[in-house]
Image 1 (cartoon, rainbow, N blue to C red):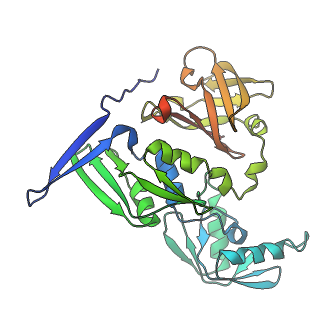
Image 2 (cartoon, rainbow, N blue to C red):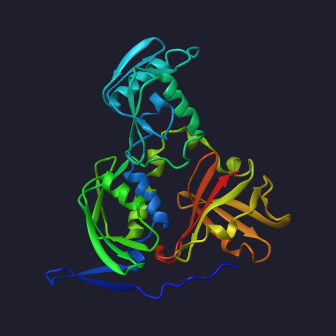
Length: 342
């Protein structure tokens, strides 16, 4: 059985001194702090990463983007793609006929840009095709491009390994993405609130807590979905194939390792099984609509999987993955469960 972790302190104050004997006090509220493994870190990364989904009409993948401008030929028609507004011209050519191959041929060299802002120059079509083939399936959770952070943003930092406190001010998405993804074990950080985000309608959203930030981002995920996943039916996805737990976060800690080795199957008749080391745990599942979202209810016999026995809010899903959240404590003690298809 997993250990239950308790937050013993609601606030802690860290003070450090400069060489001029001036002091700076940094206050971190534990409810509004996060670490690299925290669920909110992934959301922040997806908002601040380099946008790689919008140009899928060109490269066919969300794993990278093509730096503009680019010269392309589609079905023998040439397009000079200068900005995102030119993507529609490429799509229009693809839509002209159902018998064309619709393959986009680039004028090389081109520059590929990755979510971490790294740029890679590609000299030939053969090199490009080799890179694309090596990706496999797209990441199930792509960039969230229909909401943006407004800068500058200040973040307080505490490193529990050497007990050093500091702060940093970030000026753009690249810096925020790099900061979050370079966090190390033992580092606890927190935004200096308030901060603001801007949605696709141009409205500014004032944020004063991590819970508000998480909700603001997750509320627009479906608006950002430019794929066909919006046509998927959750029950059909759930009952196709077997699943494993790719992420579990509860009681303030990443507890994914507890579920290593389990294979989960969901049957159309509402029953389910979890199998590990030839031992089968039986259960049942149900999907309900609740306040505008889908809720996945899980139940398993015995106590081994009791932490899964919740009404899970379905945050997003694809044909091969699901992100779920169990809300409690007014957002201060949420649990998170990600399933990925085997």
